Length: 623
Image (cartoon, rainbow, N blue to C red; front, side, top):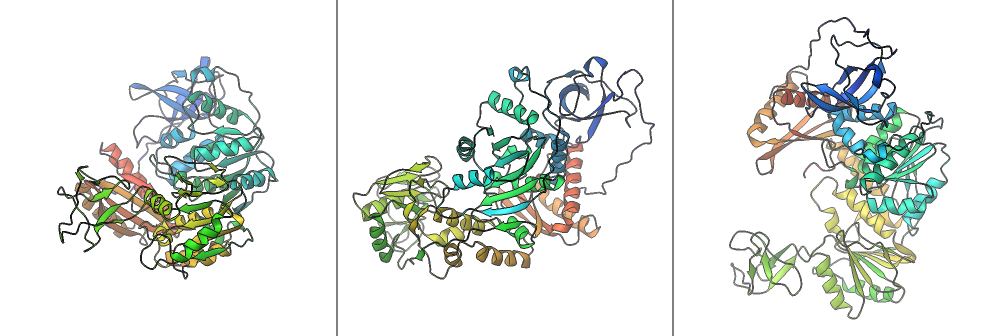
């Protein structure tokens, strides 16, 4: 890997001022959608007189570039250029401006922060144009930047109350003057909140293409708006933006799937710091990144002084429902519905022999599993059914299910409480509202419906399994899940946890203080130099190049081009012929690391090599 010093020699040339144009600002500075990573700088083009009145900041144009016609976006108009020779703009693609100077500066900052080409960010920030909408007229309002005093806070949602009622009430009582932007993790939540706030505008990818583009242009040209959307709405070009609200900021849905993998939380922080924009995070339990900012007092913490009735019930022999819990469930059934939270969906993950405990395997080498109570045992790889299964080790004929899922739990709970109505809710078949006055709801994480008057009991099954997942986010994800589901209990409801009574989440839940756990987690992260106290990078590359890349990184560190404080882990096999290298460096050295990786990608691109897959501060370091 050639991680040589990032120097570029530039010949001294006289600045060019075109003579032919009658305009005082005859040159357009643009970003070009070249499709080539290392051609990520801005370029200058002459503006023909016949296009001069149409060319302004945020306009889509077409320009000649390396022998072909490509799309470009106007950043600004200037009087003189450093380029010795300038080509002219070919045509204006759309008369509508799709970006403000502020939103373009934000996009540039995000591209720098995540070592990306600006157009990789633009594809998320600006929806595809629709010609019929382009022909419509949108009033051009003057830019009126916010004059509010910027505030920053984390607002905790209290238990029992409807979260959407709380969010809507919080936003409606905001003292900010100007436009407000609310970003939620999923379209379902965005649509639901939009119906509750009169006059609000929805900006979401699930809208029809024309509807999304029309709403986007209304936002671009409006003022005093309330905009509600999902991930990409964080870039909404609101000229008078005064406040940003991010709901459930720790959700994986707030992380962009496409390259370069930016996330809403950090983009919102960047945006608020570039202008006098108030920034508020709303949720039940903060992520580790936000917990660090609360600890450092960069964010105010608006807590909910509440108490929750929490009880723990430890399993003794691996039973789903401990006997003590069974009697509590029978009492709660007389009061109202009961919610059960399962750690996973499906019926079971695998099968072991109940006699010798060896994993049941197929002849092809795949694990055997069971999809439903009456279904045959099948292989997860070749799908071959085994009608009369016998253990290959001890010839035992009784299978034991491990990694039970929500389908299996529904069967076992139904058998324990015959005649009780059971409803299941999962990501594939989600129920928003449960209106029955009794019965059981069995839900997977994130899919629990809201009961009309709250649940008489919320039972979190196999509670410790949530905390034993392997990735770095397991604890904060579990903490959020416990708090958000406990909040669904009624005022007199009970939260029952199937886990040991000494687990710290029990005390945190009962006092409604996630900080009792998060503070300890932060201390542990600080001791081992893990995020949020370090800038983390995952670098995925083909196995044949991983060792040379590792040597190049270490050489860069020896030469002082990579911070000495940097920790390089790996390479480890990710999947197939792809290896992963994890790079960690203190936050103070993060810009230096990102700059070096950006230059590395540029050099691979200019050498016509396949780009490495780089994720900066990803949701997970292991998947």
